[in-house]
Length: 116
Length: 111
Image (tube, rainbow over all chains, first blue to last red):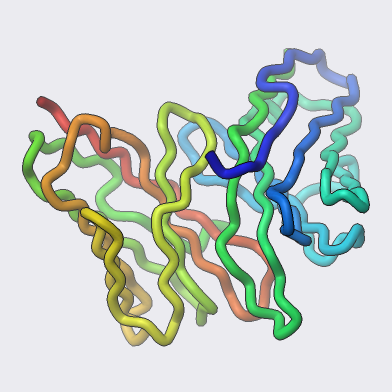
């Protein structure tokens, strides 16, 4: 148990729709990251939020957006869904210290999204 | 882009044997982490090794890091059927924010 939770566990959408995935970080963590994992691949970094601001982004289009709330919960929003967006979406929380030292990222169980 | 590359892609051993997985990466790192994933579920953190460390142990796990060769290895001793999973190395770079994962090693431990 990492203390990181995600909802929903599974989701089916159709092409063109919008989806919101949710994550609750581990208590005391100030950073949340989102990853996309296609079948048979390793996770790919989407973006990271630190104290409610996006402070890093991977190679994903703007239709992937996010929010981090004061209680360190987070959302991943994907607009105009495409078939290739079908994947396991993972969030991870960690603590970024004052000296910029990054500690272990703890992952949630993921949300499996299927786009038809 | 995926920086870490695990080797082998797949490994099949019997219970009681040792399993060794290797990881190579390309750029300077802050730390390197190993994760386990069962059947497409969430990632379970196994061990973190910092760039100034050469070896770490945790239970039946032993991780080594050679920054001059940009490589790491994960050794699981006395493997069990419950160790069957995919194993990923992930590098945390000084210049970035993300963990960079490879495609993983699929380990099958048969009774």
